[in-house]
Image (cartoon, rainbow, N blue to C red):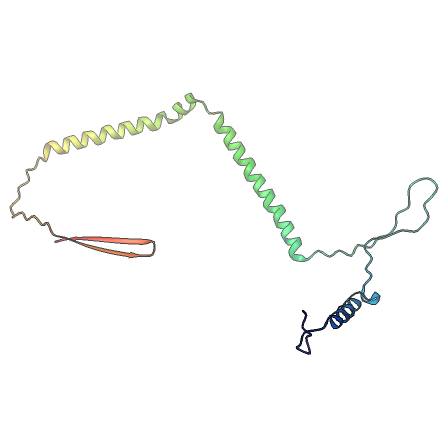
Length: 166
């Protein structure tokens, strides 16, 4: 059952039917429908032969400034990405044509320099260890601590554990 909005009591079947009829009539009145043309029809007669003369059709579209800015920016980004892609393609094509012999010839001076530096470092280390041979003498008492204090802090997804040796 429907309830009448002003009376606060249930409507009878006759009152509900009358209210529905009133609402439908108000909603579908002929003067309430707004006629908007959705197409253009040219009623000028066509010539018997040849091309049809042009007919002026007004263009009422308006492009907002932000839409034009986004369009220009997307064209610029696309051109920039295309340039970066072409540069990467050229670099990768150059790397693909590298042979093992050219890599070995290119790295040979660096390998020789590294080998010379390693030999010099080894010679210096051997010469220094031969001269300074020390004996470690401990002159204090040694204590052995076995007590360990464990502190745990757990909050959220991070945890911290601290061990104190005393």
